[in-house]
Length: 122
Image 1 (tube, rainbow, N blue to C red):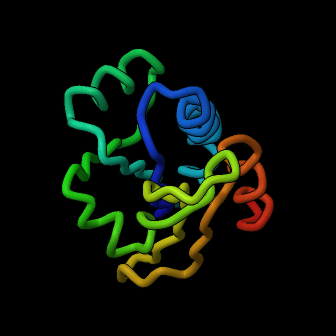
Image 2 (cartoon, rainbow, N blue to C red; image 1 turned 120 degrees about the vertical axis):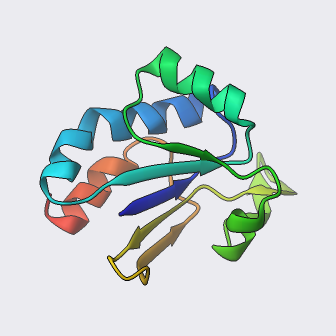
């Protein structure tokens, strides 16, 4: 399973990233890989985002940031040359037993899914 963390639904970068996963979902699923996106957004916002963009994989809400912090996907990061605290755009490949096989932090919103597919030979 691919678990990816993103800062905010319906923002330009996060929309590109989600749509990239959507557009590659058939190939990922065909290789036995499911996708889940997680952000601190409220479920209502995620539902609107999912419906507006036609996303066909689960989007989970983590408003307490407990899961984000457990994965190391929330903390200090650089944004426009300044240190800020927030969601660190991250992607994880998790095996059937729940073990993290691959952890990637500070990934790009665009082009990342293509790189994942190449790395996973999908």
